[in-house]
Image 1: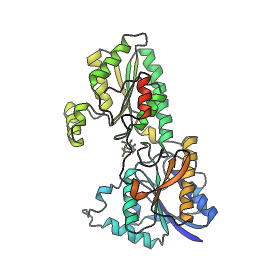
Image 2: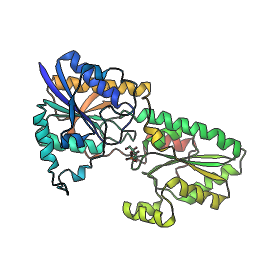
Image 3: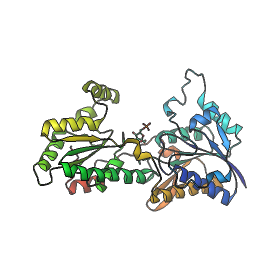
Image 4: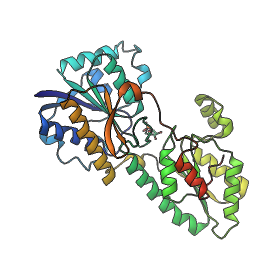
Length: 357
Ligand code: F6P
């Protein structure tokens, strides 16, 4: 049995992409006669026809490597059917290049946007399999995406390090964790790092409530405060606005980041010495954790099994302790946000963590 497999990684990178690519490749070479085509920079490479026939040796030594050996790019789904200035029909080009490469299937590693385009291509008749990656953990139908646990480890390490300097100075430290729409990373690392306040995009806040919690701590024996705040956190008023309006408001106020605004507000309201810390893309860099190496490998091997069985139009998933798959059409475009009543939120509240709502 022979199969020509195209692989691409699209959207923001994360640790575990190479481990997943390796998982697909090694299992495919092992189980059937596989030829693998590496497509450069996600859908951009598929549209523009940039690819290379991969050698088996190229999948060796990449298990622990961060980033992606294939390169990645953000090619927004909303523009896929739009003919822009370059006059390129992107969907047509992707289908033509799939034919040119003589692919039996296309494996796409990515987040929500990547899955939406994967579903589009599947509906256009291509054989597609998705693998869910993102540090945001916001893909519907899978308990975890790969990349998430590594980012939790990194963000927790940041919080731990901030903890000691915060305690030494008696300061209020506002740590901005990645996650524009979904607060999973902030919630998990906030709990793991022992944050006093956790602020998520899904639970709009009132700065007065946060100030009260910081003030209480400032007046206690432990004068310092640790705040884990998602980059997409917003006030109750901002939650009623459109994203563009919110951005305009912040610009008007002179802030780009939520953490710098919050640190300034808290120092003015409570009189504490406050600092903002933004670890940014450090959370997406470097080697995957052992957990993510295992999960990426599981996902990659499962994708190869689906190819062997000629089962296409699916995205691989972890449900409970089992690796399984969902129909692309069922999960594409459905974000998985933190429910306000999620058990981890309740747990955090029950141990005194303030959400500011
Ligand atoms: O989706 C992953 C993510 O890191 C988000 O948490 C963050 O909001 C966004 O990507 C940042 O995107 P970029 O790398 O394009 O700045």
